[in-house]
Amino acid sequence: MRILFDKQIFLLQNFGGISRYFGEIFKMNGGDVQVQRIDIIDSKKENIRPVSGDIFSRGIRYFKRKAGLEIIKPDPNIEQAQWTISKSDFDIFHPTYYDNYFIEHLKGPFVITVYDMIHELYREYFSLSDRTSSNKKELCEKASAVITISDTTKSDLINIFRIDEEKVHSIHLASDFNKVAAVRPSSFDGFENYILFTGTRWAYKNFYFTLLALRDILKQDSSLQLVCTGHEFGADEIQYFSDLGLTSQVKHLYLDNDNELAWVYRHARLFIFPSLYEGFGFPLLEAFASDCPVVSSNRGSLKEIGGNAPIYFEPKNIKEIQSAVSCALYDNEVRIRMIEEGRRQFSKFSWEKCRLQTKNVYTSMLH
Image (cartoon, rainbow, N blue to C red; front, top):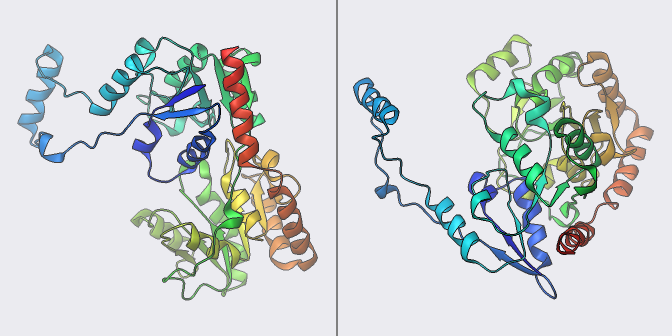
């Protein structure tokens, strides 16, 4: 059984949950499964014509496009992928994201993995020109099988896209974060008593509302900090922290790798995950693996993945957020229980199981 994967997601992100997922799926190579991958072409910058920024030049390019006179240089990675798909000998194609470039070049079956339904449930957070949702819907309709990474995502996909339930398969992801050796970050000085928030702070991540809810707790304990990973704070964020009177207690910490992330989890008082929606929720498993108590939103798949380990809250309810955080910070019996439940919950997820279930989907497609 020969499975061909493209490299869409690896062109979009160097690190991330989806890249990690396919890295694990590739490990099924061997025995009766042969994993084939389309190579990435490195476009040389010197071959790309610089874009002029003056108004006159932009105007000329606009009218050339309208008249069909401007030649748009094709993406070499797409051309390479299309050629490989049309010429290679394989049984099943598995694209790693939602670009539909391959539809006209593919003769055999394909499977698509859907990671979440954020673009559909929170459409207002995305540009109207964003084609992610429309491409996703087309691929789900044309695929021989659809894999979702949680039961929640499966249910949302079926309800929103009206996809035949029989061809949708829910397969949980996993984490090996318990095997990551913790290494103290070089810039870790000064962080001793902190709540941890990881990743991006985009709108549906609910960070700014959560900080408003945490303001009273932080002000009651001047030694307590909120430590954020992810991208650096912008000027607007810094002003917001100042408006809340929390400039000295909201800190950014740059991390180089998972080893440093493991250290930060293991030394946090708790991890807070206030997202309005998640298709799976890798950070929950990372925290469980690090014996870090978790307080979490009750939305999306988070209760499905978190089980009994976190204290849950309604992510737009200030009092519920405050109550959950206070309990996890100051009730030692509750903290011990949360850590133990986290270990139990973490053990329920396995990459080996994920690969086996994925292989079963491939096999069912051929039959």
